[in-house]
Length: 184
Image 1 (cartoon, helix red, strand yellow):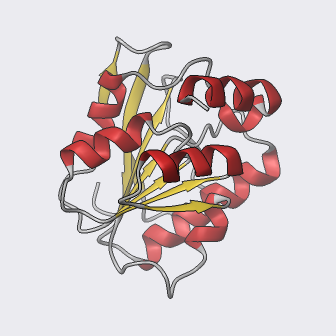
Image 2 (spheres, one colour):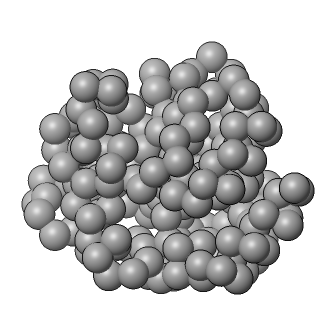
């Protein structure tokens, strides 16, 4: 199955967890990959069909990458397309709550559609990200959103701060790349 077909099936069957009308553009993918530099481990949350995964693999050649995708069909597509990385078919909050499996410091690269996720999943995901960053102060989150404000409100981490890094106007729809970290 092609990535376009897989995307359309996922978008039509579960629009709240896909949250996009088309896959991310190469410009957005490259902006996300550039913003994720300087890490010894990358964990991509909501990898979808792999638009951002491809940029991460191209730009961060020697960095271990774990792609996390909730939809098992998309996760299988990612395994076939990127055999050199670890792919987990699971919810982001489940993977982030496995401290024994995760590195001490990492960059989380997220395409999770926080504004369209079902409320329970949105909360579990955002709280798991906040806890991950609090427990690993050298880690950070790189997240994009199609809206002009912070990707999600912070619920428990007063020590974390959002910073807008870049706007990508040549994406459908336009997007902004944000960073959440303790050092911003």
